[in-house]
Image (cartoon, rainbow, N blue to C red):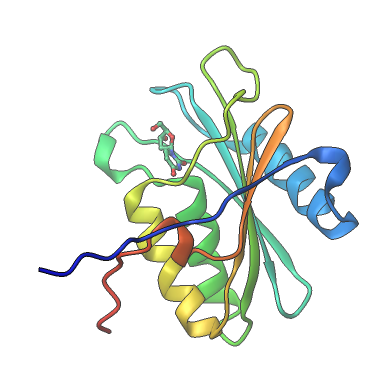
Length: 157
Ligand code: THU
């Protein structure tokens, strides 16, 4: 029998340690949480994706009375990009979350499995790692790629 490890490296940063480009993305993701529509969970998620053409697209979770029809913040942003900027590569994504108390979460939240798989496809189309920033109130987790969030992924497409 052979075993192998699947690892991800996560950097933990403070806001003041971010580059100006990272701060801009973090600010937009945080701001997008205010456009979440979450009457059921009251959990507000914002996402900001920077594209190779310089555009930054934001998304926020949109819930629905038919619960499974709701959409996460990450997928609302990434599918908008796919439709409107089909030729632009994804360069970076920032995700921010506000909990049911309305405050930004202390521990940065990681995207759900479905969003990881959806984002991974755009990373593979980009042909290089998409930087991931996960924003908590005071701490930001940084990963080099979506692949790091979904290391044992389905990629047969
Ligand atoms: N949510 C996101 O927007 N992104 C994720 O990766 C996980 C969860 C949303 C879905 C739902 O509206 C709320 O957060 C609570 O699960």
